[in-house]
Image 1 (cartoon, rainbow, N blue to C red):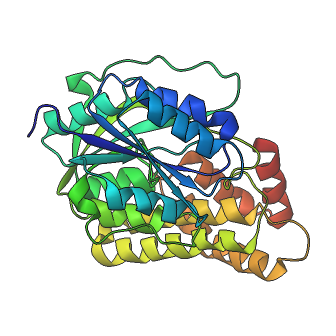
Image 2: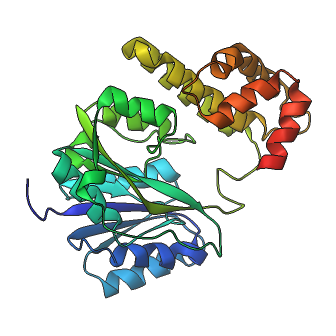
Length: 321
Protein backbone atom coordinates (compact mmCIF):
# COMPACT_ATOMS: atom_id res chain seq x y z
CA UNK A 1 0.00 0.00 0.00
CA UNK A 2 1.30 3.44 -0.94
CA UNK A 3 2.29 5.33 2.23
CA UNK A 4 0.77 8.56 0.96
CA UNK A 5 -1.75 7.84 -1.81
CA UNK A 6 -3.90 10.49 -3.44
CA UNK A 7 -7.33 10.57 -1.83
CA UNK A 8 -10.27 12.14 -3.66
CA UNK A 9 -12.86 14.08 -1.67
CA UNK A 10 -16.15 14.61 -3.52
CA UNK A 11 -18.48 17.41 -2.44
CA UNK A 12 -21.86 17.78 -4.26
CA UNK A 13 -23.09 21.35 -3.87
CA UNK A 14 -26.47 23.03 -4.30
CA UNK A 15 -27.57 26.36 -2.81
CA UNK A 16 -25.68 26.15 0.47
CA UNK A 17 -23.72 29.41 0.30
CA UNK A 18 -24.24 30.01 4.03
CA UNK A 19 -22.42 26.79 4.94
CA UNK A 20 -20.12 26.07 2.00
CA UNK A 21 -17.02 27.90 3.20
CA UNK A 22 -17.16 26.05 6.53
CA UNK A 23 -17.26 22.75 4.65
CA UNK A 24 -14.44 23.58 2.24
CA UNK A 25 -12.20 25.02 4.97
CA UNK A 26 -12.61 21.86 7.03
CA UNK A 27 -11.39 19.82 4.04
CA UNK A 28 -8.50 22.14 3.23
CA UNK A 29 -7.35 21.92 6.86
CA UNK A 30 -7.05 18.14 6.93
CA UNK A 31 -3.94 16.71 8.56
CA UNK A 32 -3.76 14.37 5.55
CA UNK A 33 -2.76 16.73 2.77
CA UNK A 34 -2.44 14.63 -0.40
CA UNK A 35 -5.99 15.33 -1.47
CA UNK A 36 -7.91 15.89 -4.67
CA UNK A 37 -10.88 18.04 -3.64
CA UNK A 38 -13.69 17.85 -6.20
CA UNK A 39 -16.39 20.50 -5.80
CA UNK A 40 -19.44 19.76 -7.95
CA UNK A 41 -21.68 22.80 -8.31
CA UNK A 42 -25.04 21.30 -9.24
CA UNK A 43 -26.53 24.38 -10.90
CA UNK A 44 -26.67 26.49 -7.75
CA UNK A 45 -28.62 29.74 -8.04
CA UNK A 46 -26.90 31.45 -5.11
CA UNK A 47 -23.17 32.29 -4.70
CA UNK A 48 -21.96 28.70 -4.47
CA UNK A 49 -20.46 28.70 -7.97
CA UNK A 50 -18.51 31.87 -7.21
CA UNK A 51 -17.29 30.50 -3.87
CA UNK A 52 -16.08 27.30 -5.53
CA UNK A 53 -14.10 29.25 -8.12
CA UNK A 54 -12.56 31.46 -5.44
CA UNK A 55 -11.29 28.40 -3.58
CA UNK A 56 -9.97 26.80 -6.75
CA UNK A 57 -7.76 29.88 -7.15
CA UNK A 58 -6.54 29.55 -3.57
CA UNK A 59 -5.77 25.82 -3.51
CA UNK A 60 -4.41 23.83 -6.46
CA UNK A 61 -5.82 20.63 -4.96
CA UNK A 62 -9.33 21.84 -5.76
CA UNK A 63 -11.15 20.96 -8.98
CA UNK A 64 -14.52 22.55 -9.75
CA UNK A 65 -17.30 21.18 -11.92
CA UNK A 66 -20.20 23.45 -12.88
CA UNK A 67 -23.22 21.58 -14.23
CA UNK A 68 -26.94 21.96 -14.71
CA UNK A 69 -29.01 20.93 -11.74
CA UNK A 70 -29.59 17.19 -11.72
CA UNK A 71 -29.79 16.31 -8.06
CA UNK A 72 -27.47 14.98 -5.38
CA UNK A 73 -26.84 11.58 -6.96
CA UNK A 74 -25.95 12.98 -10.36
CA UNK A 75 -23.60 15.55 -8.80
CA UNK A 76 -21.83 12.91 -6.74
CA UNK A 77 -21.59 10.67 -9.82
CA UNK A 78 -19.95 13.49 -11.80
CA UNK A 79 -17.24 13.59 -9.16
CA UNK A 80 -16.80 9.83 -9.27
CA UNK A 81 -16.42 10.00 -13.05
CA UNK A 82 -13.42 12.34 -12.93
CA UNK A 83 -11.68 11.34 -9.67
CA UNK A 84 -8.07 10.20 -9.90
CA UNK A 85 -7.40 9.26 -6.27
CA UNK A 86 -6.57 5.74 -5.17
CA UNK A 87 -9.20 6.16 -2.46
CA UNK A 88 -12.34 8.29 -2.26
CA UNK A 89 -14.61 9.78 0.37
CA UNK A 90 -17.75 11.92 0.14
CA UNK A 91 -18.75 14.94 2.21
CA UNK A 92 -22.06 16.80 1.90
CA UNK A 93 -21.68 20.53 1.38
CA UNK A 94 -23.66 21.68 4.43
CA UNK A 95 -21.71 19.33 6.69
CA UNK A 96 -18.10 19.58 7.83
CA UNK A 97 -15.39 17.34 9.25
CA UNK A 98 -12.70 17.32 11.92
CA UNK A 99 -9.07 17.92 10.85
CA UNK A 100 -8.37 14.22 11.41
CA UNK A 101 -11.27 12.90 9.31
CA UNK A 102 -9.28 11.65 6.29
CA UNK A 103 -6.15 10.70 8.23
CA UNK A 104 -8.11 8.59 10.70
CA UNK A 105 -9.99 6.76 7.97
CA UNK A 106 -6.74 6.10 6.08
CA UNK A 107 -4.93 4.92 9.22
CA UNK A 108 -7.79 2.51 9.86
CA UNK A 109 -7.34 1.09 6.36
CA UNK A 110 -3.58 0.69 6.79
CA UNK A 111 -3.64 -0.77 10.29
CA UNK A 112 -6.55 -3.05 9.49
CA UNK A 113 -5.29 -4.06 6.04
CA UNK A 114 -8.72 -3.18 4.64
CA UNK A 115 -10.15 -1.47 1.56
CA UNK A 116 -13.10 0.27 3.28
CA UNK A 117 -13.15 2.15 6.57
CA UNK A 118 -15.79 4.08 8.44
CA UNK A 119 -16.00 6.46 11.39
CA UNK A 120 -18.94 7.82 13.36
CA UNK A 121 -20.75 11.15 13.26
CA UNK A 122 -22.67 13.58 15.41
CA UNK A 123 -25.75 15.61 14.53
CA UNK A 124 -24.67 19.22 14.69
CA UNK A 125 -26.86 22.26 15.32
CA UNK A 126 -25.72 25.88 15.09
CA UNK A 127 -23.95 26.82 18.29
CA UNK A 128 -23.18 23.27 19.44
CA UNK A 129 -19.80 22.59 21.05
CA UNK A 130 -17.63 20.25 19.02
CA UNK A 131 -16.60 16.88 20.44
CA UNK A 132 -12.94 16.34 21.28
CA UNK A 133 -10.98 15.85 18.05
CA UNK A 134 -8.07 13.45 18.04
CA UNK A 135 -6.04 11.00 16.02
CA UNK A 136 -7.32 7.45 16.19
CA UNK A 137 -5.46 5.04 18.47
CA UNK A 138 -4.40 1.73 16.95
CA UNK A 139 -6.15 -0.28 19.67
CA UNK A 140 -9.47 1.43 18.83
CA UNK A 141 -9.57 0.11 15.26
CA UNK A 142 -12.03 -2.73 14.79
CA UNK A 143 -11.61 -5.00 11.79
CA UNK A 144 -14.91 -6.70 11.10
CA UNK A 145 -15.94 -9.42 8.65
CA UNK A 146 -18.59 -8.10 6.27
CA UNK A 147 -21.47 -9.91 8.00
CA UNK A 148 -20.53 -8.42 11.38
CA UNK A 149 -20.27 -4.99 9.78
CA UNK A 150 -23.78 -5.36 8.34
CA UNK A 151 -25.03 -6.13 11.86
CA UNK A 152 -23.54 -2.87 13.14
CA UNK A 153 -24.95 -0.92 10.20
CA UNK A 154 -28.46 -2.34 10.49
CA UNK A 155 -28.60 -1.73 14.23
CA UNK A 156 -27.05 1.74 13.65
CA UNK A 157 -24.26 0.91 16.06
CA UNK A 158 -21.21 2.92 15.04
CA UNK A 159 -21.65 2.49 11.27
CA UNK A 160 -24.33 3.99 9.07
CA UNK A 161 -25.69 3.44 5.57
CA UNK A 162 -24.81 7.03 4.61
CA UNK A 163 -22.61 7.87 1.61
CA UNK A 164 -20.43 10.05 3.84
CA UNK A 165 -18.24 9.06 6.77
CA UNK A 166 -16.40 6.34 4.85
CA UNK A 167 -13.25 5.83 2.80
CA UNK A 168 -13.36 3.44 -0.16
CA UNK A 169 -10.90 1.99 -2.60
CA UNK A 170 -11.84 4.03 -5.67
CA UNK A 171 -12.02 1.01 -7.95
CA UNK A 172 -14.99 -0.24 -5.94
CA UNK A 173 -17.11 2.33 -7.76
CA UNK A 174 -16.46 0.61 -11.09
CA UNK A 175 -19.99 -0.30 -12.16
CA UNK A 176 -21.56 1.35 -9.09
CA UNK A 177 -23.22 4.77 -9.16
CA UNK A 178 -25.83 6.55 -7.04
CA UNK A 179 -29.36 6.29 -8.50
CA UNK A 180 -30.25 9.56 -10.21
CA UNK A 181 -33.60 11.11 -9.35
CA UNK A 182 -34.03 9.18 -6.10
CA UNK A 183 -33.94 10.39 -2.52
CA UNK A 184 -32.03 8.43 0.14
CA UNK A 185 -29.68 7.34 -2.63
CA UNK A 186 -27.11 5.94 -0.22
CA UNK A 187 -29.35 3.07 0.93
CA UNK A 188 -29.27 1.11 -2.38
CA UNK A 189 -25.60 1.95 -3.00
CA UNK A 190 -23.61 1.46 0.19
CA UNK A 191 -24.21 -2.28 0.48
CA UNK A 192 -23.10 -2.80 -3.15
CA UNK A 193 -19.76 -1.28 -2.15
CA UNK A 194 -19.52 -3.25 1.08
CA UNK A 195 -20.01 -6.45 -0.90
CA UNK A 196 -16.64 -5.78 -2.58
CA UNK A 197 -14.72 -6.00 0.70
CA UNK A 198 -14.17 -9.10 2.84
CA UNK A 199 -13.56 -7.02 5.95
CA UNK A 200 -14.05 -3.39 6.96
CA UNK A 201 -12.17 -1.20 9.45
CA UNK A 202 -14.34 0.78 11.89
CA UNK A 203 -13.23 3.46 14.34
CA UNK A 204 -15.22 5.16 17.12
CA UNK A 205 -13.92 8.66 16.36
CA UNK A 206 -16.61 11.30 15.80
CA UNK A 207 -15.05 13.12 12.85
CA UNK A 208 -18.11 13.98 10.75
CA UNK A 209 -20.53 16.76 11.69
CA UNK A 210 -23.94 16.12 10.18
CA UNK A 211 -25.48 19.57 10.12
CA UNK A 212 -29.19 19.80 10.91
CA UNK A 213 -31.01 22.55 9.02
CA UNK A 214 -34.75 23.00 8.60
CA UNK A 215 -34.73 22.95 4.79
CA UNK A 216 -32.60 19.83 4.33
CA UNK A 217 -34.13 16.71 2.77
CA UNK A 218 -34.10 14.88 6.09
CA UNK A 219 -35.80 17.76 7.95
CA UNK A 220 -38.32 18.80 5.28
CA UNK A 221 -42.02 17.92 5.37
CA UNK A 222 -43.29 14.73 3.78
CA UNK A 223 -43.69 14.50 0.04
CA UNK A 224 -44.31 11.43 -2.07
CA UNK A 225 -40.64 11.16 -3.09
CA UNK A 226 -39.77 10.30 0.49
CA UNK A 227 -41.31 6.90 -0.12
CA UNK A 228 -38.04 6.16 -1.93
CA UNK A 229 -36.61 5.47 1.53
CA UNK A 230 -39.17 2.71 2.11
CA UNK A 231 -38.56 1.13 -1.28
CA UNK A 232 -34.78 1.21 -0.88
CA UNK A 233 -34.79 -0.09 2.68
CA UNK A 234 -37.22 -2.87 1.83
CA UNK A 235 -34.91 -3.95 -0.98
CA UNK A 236 -32.00 -3.94 1.46
CA UNK A 237 -34.06 -6.00 3.92
CA UNK A 238 -34.75 -8.58 1.20
CA UNK A 239 -31.08 -8.64 0.15
CA UNK A 240 -29.98 -9.30 3.73
CA UNK A 241 -32.68 -11.96 4.17
CA UNK A 242 -31.53 -13.78 1.03
CA UNK A 243 -27.77 -13.51 1.62
CA UNK A 244 -27.28 -13.16 5.38
CA UNK A 245 -30.16 -15.07 7.02
CA UNK A 246 -28.58 -14.67 10.47
CA UNK A 247 -29.21 -10.94 10.16
CA UNK A 248 -32.93 -10.99 9.36
CA UNK A 249 -33.84 -9.47 12.73
CA UNK A 250 -31.29 -6.69 12.29
CA UNK A 251 -32.61 -5.92 8.80
CA UNK A 252 -36.19 -5.81 10.07
CA UNK A 253 -35.16 -3.44 12.85
CA UNK A 254 -33.55 -1.03 10.38
CA UNK A 255 -36.54 -1.25 8.05
CA UNK A 256 -38.95 -0.64 10.94
CA UNK A 257 -37.00 2.46 12.01
CA UNK A 258 -37.15 3.86 8.47
CA UNK A 259 -40.89 3.18 8.22
CA UNK A 260 -41.50 5.04 11.49
CA UNK A 261 -39.29 7.94 10.47
CA UNK A 262 -41.20 8.50 7.22
CA UNK A 263 -44.64 7.68 8.63
CA UNK A 264 -44.57 10.36 11.32
CA UNK A 265 -43.65 13.06 8.84
CA UNK A 266 -47.09 12.65 7.24
CA UNK A 267 -49.80 15.06 8.32
CA UNK A 268 -53.22 15.88 6.91
CA UNK A 269 -55.30 13.77 4.52
CA UNK A 270 -53.41 14.30 1.26
CA UNK A 271 -51.21 11.25 1.77
CA UNK A 272 -53.66 9.04 3.63
CA UNK A 273 -52.95 5.97 1.39
CA UNK A 274 -49.24 6.21 2.22
CA UNK A 275 -49.99 6.65 5.91
CA UNK A 276 -52.18 3.53 5.92
CA UNK A 277 -49.52 1.58 4.02
CA UNK A 278 -46.78 2.49 6.47
CA UNK A 279 -48.95 1.97 9.54
CA UNK A 280 -49.69 -1.52 8.22
CA UNK A 281 -45.92 -2.15 8.01
CA UNK A 282 -45.48 -0.97 11.60
CA UNK A 283 -48.08 -3.48 12.78
CA UNK A 284 -46.55 -6.22 10.64
CA UNK A 285 -43.07 -5.95 12.15
CA UNK A 286 -43.63 -4.51 15.63
CA UNK A 287 -43.77 -7.82 17.50
CA UNK A 288 -40.46 -8.96 16.04
CA UNK A 289 -38.86 -5.62 16.88
CA UNK A 290 -40.24 -5.56 20.42
CA UNK A 291 -38.73 -8.95 21.25
CA UNK A 292 -35.40 -8.43 19.49
CA UNK A 293 -33.08 -8.10 22.48
CA UNK A 294 -30.35 -6.70 20.21
CA UNK A 295 -32.62 -4.05 18.69
CA UNK A 296 -32.16 -0.33 19.21
CA UNK A 297 -33.90 0.88 22.34
CA UNK A 298 -35.66 3.63 20.37
CA UNK A 299 -37.06 1.12 17.86
CA UNK A 300 -38.25 -1.25 20.58
CA UNK A 301 -39.96 1.58 22.46
CA UNK A 302 -41.68 2.64 19.23
CA UNK A 303 -42.85 -0.93 18.68
CA UNK A 304 -44.27 -1.05 22.22
CA UNK A 305 -45.97 2.35 21.88
CA UNK A 306 -47.58 1.30 18.60
CA UNK A 307 -49.86 -1.08 20.51
CA UNK A 308 -51.50 2.04 21.95
CA UNK A 309 -52.58 3.05 18.45
CA UNK A 310 -51.39 5.48 15.81
CA UNK A 311 -52.31 8.66 17.69
CA UNK A 312 -50.32 7.62 20.77
CA UNK A 313 -47.13 6.71 18.94
CA UNK A 314 -47.41 9.73 16.64
CA UNK A 315 -47.68 12.05 19.66
CA UNK A 316 -44.69 10.42 21.36
CA UNK A 317 -42.65 10.74 18.18
CA UNK A 318 -43.40 14.46 17.86
CA UNK A 319 -42.46 15.35 21.44
CA UNK A 320 -39.20 13.41 21.28
CA UNK A 321 -37.93 14.98 18.04
